[in-house]
Image (cartoon, rainbow over all chains, first blue to last red):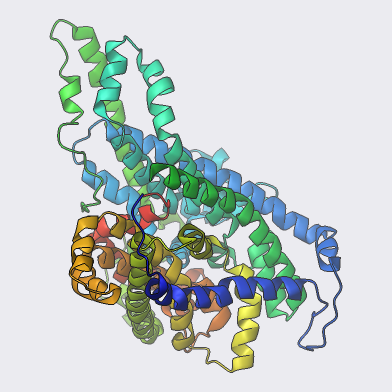
Length: 296
Length: 313
């Protein structure tokens, strides 16, 4: 452990502005949000009364909110599954040495640089629900390939429509997961693989006992980052479908509530979202802080 | 296009050295050759799929509305923009001029938003990162986690009171309000990136300066800042990209006439009927150009920012 500077006044002074600003704009506003969610401020009229957890009970009794949670669930499963599978597959293929690896890597990653709004423009077209003669987008590809049975209404499909919204999200972030896994693969010392091979480990055992355990911290990071992004999904849905019932998730429902000045409802949805994210993130932050402490 | 993403193999770990098998195992070689072929076929297939939306964007943006037809929607333009249009109708270029007219003012505003937001948050992040990496004041780790949490919160969790705050303070619905917001919520990740960056600078360098009697501020200004360029490139790119691509804050806190390009683009795209998808696609390309250029030119640093999201560097 490094020896501390005796005088810790100046450093504290340097970061004090940040602590104050984040104290207000992160923690203060979260507190304000929770207090609005416990009030009956459902219109522009500022008169406010404390109503306890009434808004929460009301929300969970609403078919519409439950539907938005189900949508979020479907989206999250497909989004996480898709990014993890393709991210791992790409990293695995590229790690073994590929000519023009840089080209593949750059192409797989570039969608990350584009905004969800911009990619929403093209994906709205690709996921056009018209079929048969009027089909365009992906349905037209199926039509031309003679795979008509694959044509579907995409996000307009009841039940699984959110899986279609996950497609552009996977397109944008699978490359990111690839980059994480690739750095994980490249961090495994070659001696470790060699040693396992010397011991006569089969390729499968090499993966099972050497490579997968070495990759698990990276996989956890990827899972957490993609998972918490998924819970917040908003831009993409607004860009592809606007805020409509079929593709409603808590974040877009919040937008509807806030634009109709139902502050109590939007604050309640926001608190629930925050809790979801906190359940994922807080243990992760504590885990990394502890791991770092051990290293020191 | 090949971007230096900083993920290249370390020397001496080349996979090719592994596959130089022994000559007598020819069946293994045949199998290895087949796996290789399968791998390349798959990789190229994925490459085509990932690039497909870009093809659609470019091709559609070049098609005048009267040439848009579902049956040929994946094909190249029937008439290229430089060919004369039927009966003096619009050409593909008209999509682009329409998009440019709809977006140019907001693109200018977004530069005025994203560049200062990137610079200010980076500088503050550098100060914080330096303090947290080097000065072990009591509860430094707690302070760090306190700052970091702000990076992961769903911004919806603060949006309702933030909108109320903006209204009651009478702040304008333009990019100046967004600038403040992007600086504030950019602080956690900039702090994180610089903290990890400074942890990698030899401790002796700063010790020596301290021995010379330099105070903390002088050490920071004269020793640390000059070494910080790579850190700054990463945070500036990250902040620039996220401010440029932001839609959430823009939608809640600004309006179409004074807000950034994401709002203007969304407006252009949502207003578009199937007939002038071309203009929307041209707009999407225009709006993505700055971040794409940054990615292509400074790919390695771009990845640096991405990776820092996984906390441990």
